[in-house]
Image 1 (tube, helix red, strand yellow):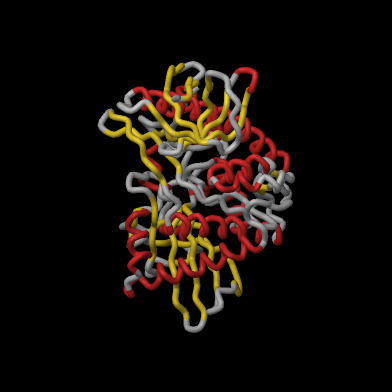
Image 2: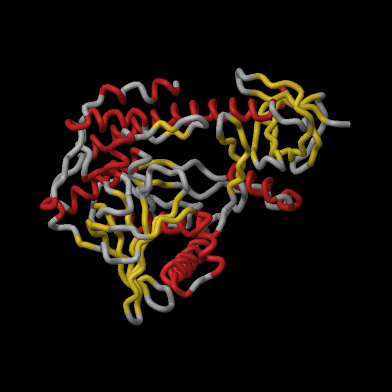
Length: 427
């Protein structure tokens, strides 16, 4: 499956799939290159698809959220476009990344890079001192980022709060206020660290990813962009895919003991949520606390974001985008391809996790029981407390356990097919 994801790349004629731009093609773009502009991402990220700026303007401020604009370059129905639809999204594997678009054009044209002017679809948000949004509008823009920060560097700035970085500090305060409004509207926030197996110098390591201040800042900026994109698209009758999620089903709120453990609580909440869907009409997104929402902030990583941006750009340019039937067909193709990619990526992730377990000198781990998956086969879902990963395991000898119970287990047997760990209780 993984090999099938990337099979077509070497046959692509990139020149026939991408529009080569000249300066005259940017004549209707506003030039924002003088703004102090930040990108915040992982150190080794190739796909930089977002940036933020703040224009301090008297009693009001302007937050700019910039998103890379591959729909300005990629020709629809070209091999480049069709290949991206087959992939559906960038797949991040432990030993390599299979990118949605070829690496050479990501770096040379699609990604937001320092030291050059980058075309973006930028959201202008005017807000007052009370942090209320006065107006919001999208523009085709040119930006030239001058602060390339990692999440760790951004966290340091937000922690020490130097006066010379007042723009980033004000951005953070405004986005925190927007987050509070979503929580008031019923948004569900699940705070937890996540473990991830990475490879460095042919060795496997465990990396813990925490929800730090800078990661929350970027996430909230992207949610705000997606919500306002959906709202304005709805108002202007622009045909786009919306991300919807109906209200969650009720669960037993009397089981308060479950909530003593954060990971158990989060698991039960996630289990109670209805699945999100991609639809041509907006309904609501329950867990985000939004009346309308769309995914559009990762157009060089996710195909659905790319095609959503394409529809909006067509409207800005006065062109006709995909018809309802054409858009629905691409949504269906994306959903099918995404299921395959998720399955393949999960299989790869589990296999490497098994390899990591095999190489550990310690064979005892504390786990928290979350749920039976197949009781008759003794297969259950556990949270590995020191690894910060939820994992399906075959548990024996059979014994009665209850949700949120902590158990010390040893890894008894690892089966690479179907990626199942056999664990047993340590007496």
